[in-house]
Image 1 (cartoon, helix red, strand yellow):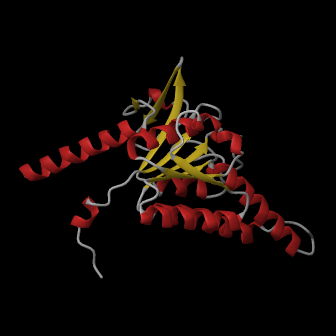
Image 2: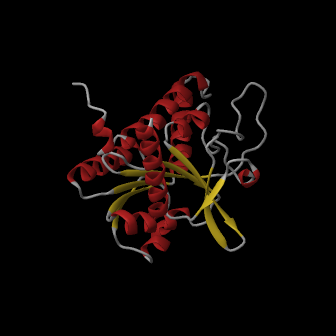
Image 3: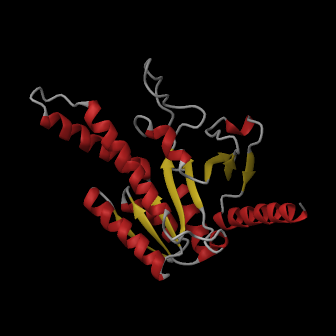
Length: 249
């Protein structure tokens, strides 16, 4: 059945990809600010349990599952979506998705090698499967009735080889293989980069899709507090301005 456009107004949620260097405080800032702004949530933790310790010192308004393989990821996705639908979770955080991407790439590469008599991996087989699974997870969670934030490490990669997809640069998310580097960020409404300026952490956003350590000097980049409650208010203010502008027309 067709869905009325007015339904969108009642289902506005954050759809954010947050990147930043390791150990800068992405996980703590994300969980703490989401809990303060929206209430209880759910964390799909792809790293070590200790990664959640700083957040736990700030809030206990979250539950979590550790993900180490595809079966655990499938269970976590179902828990997040069902919990959001039932109203138990107001937000879902995937932390750190780049770690899961690294695991999945290795798993598929090894399976491809085992299937060949030469014991050599066949990229023509495992790269399309890798892309499909990585983007499928993103799509399914973004379909949840909750705010969704994917957190990923940002570590600039070595220079690419001729003919390969760029490993860094405008619109590229490092730490992922193949065309996923470009396609994954495009699935999100907003992309934020977390950085530390002297002793102050900030979120940086650029409407032209530029991010990374040097994005501060790029025209259009704005620095905001590393707080998703504040970011949500800014988004709503922007929507209100657009609605008023459309009303005048």
